[in-house]
Length: 227
Figure 1 (cartoon, one colour):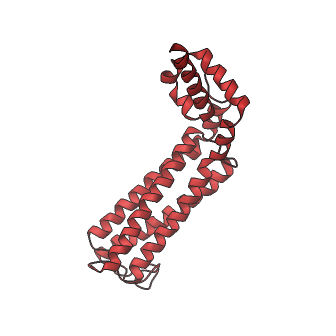
Figure 2 (cartoon, one colour):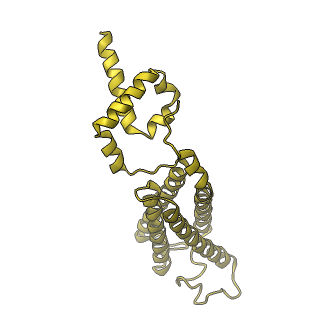
Figure 3 (tube, helix red, strand yellow):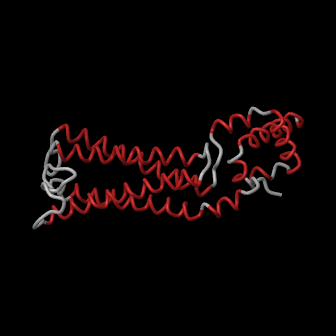
């Protein structure tokens, strides 16, 4: 007997292409961030001058130097990252239902990505790139790095929640925990399965807080009865 909700496995199968794309988007953004670190390490942030989004005032740089190529490549890969995250957002909203956690994290991801682009643009426009050592550059870099971590977290959560098939929002979980009928039903299930279910099927319990709460009540009642 399993505690998985009916239709969860079939839903996971239907979501598999989207889930793979979500993980691919996360991996690609990590690669873009690593390339951005290489841009900073080589001092190539000024490779396109203080122009953004143009490179030295043109769409395609003419007679580019090595630093120009490095910076321009970073801008191209960043633009593709915007396309991928935007596609993930649209696809996620088309395939998921209202209240799905992945919807919230995908919206957060695109907002953080646009903020990432804005911070990068400000670094270029204010000439806080290359060998600049001003306090303003330190401030922008700290903001940029913090935003990067949040972006990766939002993308990772989106991919994880799509993989696990989470559907309900936190509000619905709280409603389930407050429903006496559901708690009584879950408690009967725990009672019939015995204490072993806590160790063998924790994956099932972690997605169903009403069952976990009911289970904790059963365990507490048993402990009181043994005294």
